[in-house]
Length: 235
Image 1 (cartoon, helix red, strand yellow):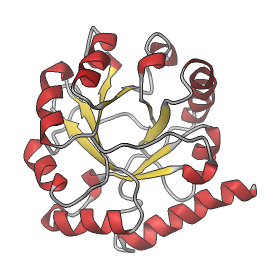
Image 2: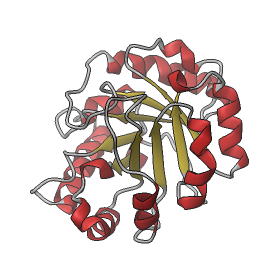
Image 3: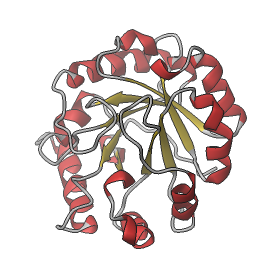
């Protein structure tokens, strides 16, 4: 497993390019470019057409991705009964596996299963689900993912109420499990990344804001510049 040590330092904020927005005809090249540009994780969205109304990438793409990067691959399972897939995604190249609390009746058991596979365990909830779902399992999580949009489609606008959810989750995290990383996925862009990071996010997932015609390296650099302003008090 590729290790990633938590830190609360503002300059250690992680950028996780989301491969759902990449050009799949150039997958290997874009994965390598994202790593060379300074991406910290690669975010890998899996949708089953049942838990969310869309289908997306799966195991063959993960296997291909793993061949082109040494970065941690952060698999986000937007699927029903996610426990069925933990082992196969772990074997195919995932370093972190995140599931939705709404998709299983046994969240704590799911976290244990991921840890037994030697992987980092993450849990997330939909924007309309009470934040309190995190509290019973927060002490055991490596990643707590806050959705900035409703899951299922890329390119959506960030939901403003997410900021208050981040602030509350950060308070709980600091009390219950300071090593847990708070991640945000959905609607993250150059205009809002500063306030999202200030609200408590440690890991910023960005798709279309990184994989676009301006260039991956250029966009990652712009994100890094925005985050660097946090330590100066200017963002």
